[in-house]
Length: 84
Image (cartoon, rainbow, N blue to C red; front, side):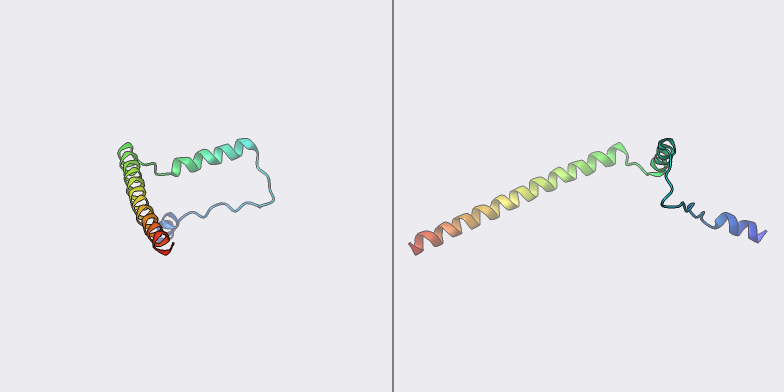
């Protein structure tokens, strides 16, 4: 009985295929379909929240770099006008 429990608990190892062996296009698409069914897709809410956060971070980074560029530009202009 313990052997049966151990067999069920042990994860199945993927079938190792010969890397030189070619598979048919139908087999390839069947495997792709199987793999996509294993994916945990995000919910609509998760997607919207993540997208919103990306936009917020892009705006924050844009403002930061705009400010740094403005300050450095004026600093360089100050150095150039004082030196000339």
